[in-house]
Length: 244
Image (cartoon, rainbow, N blue to C red):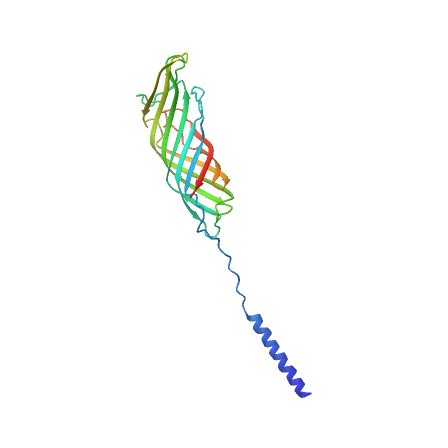
């Protein structure tokens, strides 16, 4: 009986010590696996093509046809460490607007204080005239990608872009009389940056799936310098192709 009691006490002691040892073992938490971004599509190359208009355009200026914007950017993308679905991107690029006018003389090289848009429909005129502005730009984007490892899935971006003017010119073609009869098939080009704002600031937003998205942009600064022309601001909507 004594041996049984001693055995029972010893067994209980061993079990108690074993249980305490098990309880004292710290089970390490499993580390959350980070997504593999080695083959991540960073959307370095961004190409945009869209329709462009002038907000605030007075009725005295006649535009006609498909005015367009063409933009190309080389951007560097930096994902957030705590959430790789979010990232910031920036880089250099070229942005250009091409506004089309009908039977209108755009006096880009006139020695006047104000840029004149003259309706020439009652006399000899160029049938089509384009005013093009080209900017060296630096866009900055806040991006969201639903599938950062593959680059597929929903993508959203919002940001701003700042630019400096590098060229402004007009291109006029199809010289004709007031009745619409062609007088001469030639092209006249004139270049001057005197009336155009040298810097511009624009806001932009885009949404899409994979490498294709739609975008919208609005220029906060007017096209023309104060007192040099109408206070118009370009807006644009179109498509974006991104990759690499």
